[in-house]
Image 1 (spheres, helix red, strand yellow):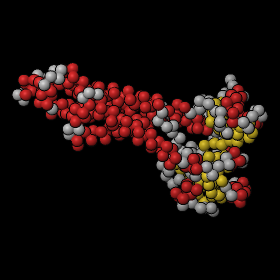
Image 2 (cartoon, one colour):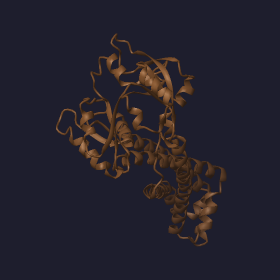
Image 3 (cartoon, helix red, strand yellow):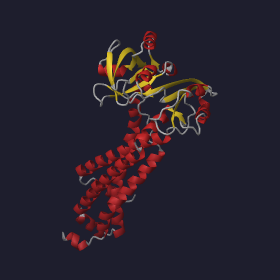
Image 4 (cartoon, one colour):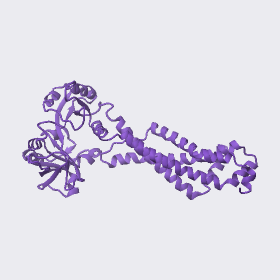
Length: 388
């Protein structure tokens, strides 16, 4: 650009104000990049099951709907299914309802389908032989200072026992260690109890299953296997949806809340605030330079040139902050994914996010710069130089 040096000098005329505004813009676009990755993660989950070793089969209607035990044998008979297990959500909390724990009532062979969960043979044998036994993740055990041999009271937020009490007691017989660093954040925080004990102790379950997990023989046939499993209960009162485990988790979240609406609402509020903030910055910047703009017109700059320079200043401000913000999001997302230990699996900031971000940068820059640019273009030289 011919007058880029003038635009740059005008932009950093008040360095403190410009830098503070840039920080706000960087924060807004950093948040945009992170939230857009969350939205993309939910949108992309479950588009294909191929490549997945395990498939999760739950109710098509709602994740709180249970499935009959008879499906286990039918799923096991589907060509391509190597093994089947099942589990129920227990909904446990320790000491306070706010201290919710990932607690599942699982089938005897549940650990066989999850070689990532490492339990010593002695502890596995103790779990199989203890009706009230429980296996807890290593991180969860450290958090609450639990050890093997402890008797732990849990309050179920959903299920009561036959006496009507929601207070349950379990004996810790083993510690779960994660053999997969990517999933350590999840497996290390599990609390596993016996499905049979859970089913016999509560009147609410009645032999039903929350979801089934199937291991496929050929990961490249996972989509076909998923369709075959769902065909078993088609047009019945317990129709199923079979997905990858990641997609199933995303589906649960979508039933609890509209992720797209939440992300959109947050970003709408952020960018509306950004409009006001950057608009105020540009208005002040142009108001302070009234005399300088008049001098530019006096030495031959046209009204259109002045308009273009002020608009360019506004767009440059937004582009600088936006690029830095999205760049930080690009660097931070892999770190967040790795640091979550598998709890979060966010996609990188892709070309689509960068393109949308660039459009937002330019659009916001033009919007906030238009009014001060229009005022600068219509500036009367005599009045401006006279200080009126």
